[in-house]
Length: 350
Ligand code: SAH
Image (cartoon, rainbow, N blue to C red; front, side, top):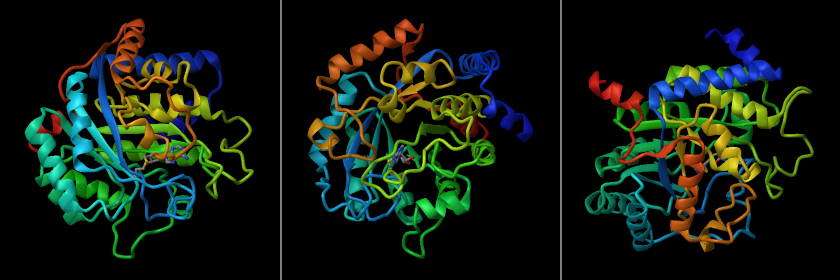
């Protein structure tokens, strides 16, 4: 697919063309990653953060936000729960928290790997290459680090730089790949100031990076952040609908990276709880990440405003997901569910 063609697809609001795009994405999903939907248990292990990202509610300068950091036993308990629920992998996510030390993380990863069959995915922000190597050595399988936008000037504005010696997210993604991680990245759709050209470049960047996992979700304004309290509409340009655009980026990600794992993201569910996940799963996505963070912590992991479920029984939640998948003619995947793209690379010895 050529860049001009991508922009045309992104821009389209014609219902017939949209149906064609989504049908093509769904057929490609079926052909390359099948009908199984893998469930990943998400655990938000710390909401401490040293960064000042203008979009994110965990940013350092929010004194009113009560911070927490889970201990190893709490995380292990959730790992065992994930196994009981039939999940094949666990995602440990956090703000960029320097006190979540590498020794602690190594131990947690080692214990999960020794005591469970789970694949372990980390999503801990920007860490040093040495730490990433140690965590890989400890057994971590996957790493998620979204580049958020390929527009460098925009990204520098919304994600003020960290310590000066730190590598850029793009450099870290290359290092993660070199270290043998299954690598995930992605973007938020609808960040004020994004152009169609930016989104088109984001998509081509997914392909250039050869991503194994691609997370795409709508940007959700958080009123306690500089970006979220700004009157600018999150959608950009007169013809933009953040909702349509998010699905189009998901569908085009599937067409450009047919063998990647693509989640129906939590942010979709936060904005469109009735059918956001289902629509993503019918337009290219093949992964669901049920949140296993205990509710008391989840309320404080406030990257954007979201409603908390009234029923926190994980068993009932998973039964409900299985029902929703069956209604789409899909089924819950078993095992760790590595992306075919990663398996292909492994087979080639890359
Ligand atoms: N600290 C880690 C994990 C952050 S949370 C990191 O920076 O990688 C995971 C993702 O949530 C981020 O990558 C970002 O894309 C998304 N996110 C953060 N704030 C958001 C917002 N206001 N709306 C939508 N998505 C958001």
